[in-house]
Image (cartoon, rainbow, N blue to C red; front, top):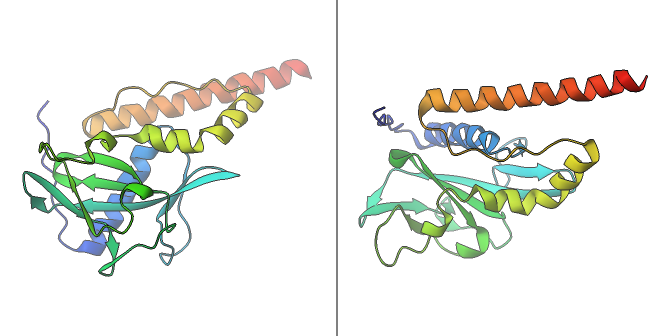
Length: 192
């Protein structure tokens, strides 16, 4: 199947809103619980995890080609974010359909980062599609809740490609959810 070239949304605000929706979909595909705070005055866009152990995520995107890769701005209104403003940056390279999940400590006080580079100096390639970092950061409470509820944790499948693959992944996730709900309701009716 031929990879579709995404249409670049020119308006930065509209593109940011679209990228946030792409983040929510991908995080859901990765089995992560995602919540969006009300309004847009926070220094982060989402929280990932469960009550008692949330991690904050600032979502950024880039279409700016630079030096054999892409330059992604990590700033708000021209200024670097303050230390502690968020736990992770989720940076999306639109043309490549690639996410970078980078710990805040690795981008502290930086105004931009270079992504999708094949340079020997590429600092952030280890964070390409590193959804496991968000999963690990929120895992302690999620594991406890899953064990408590008796739910079986499904391994995350390889990343689907294209709209059809993502739709299939979402449908399979929902199917597993319904199957678990059926099992739990059956156990309750057997106990009664």
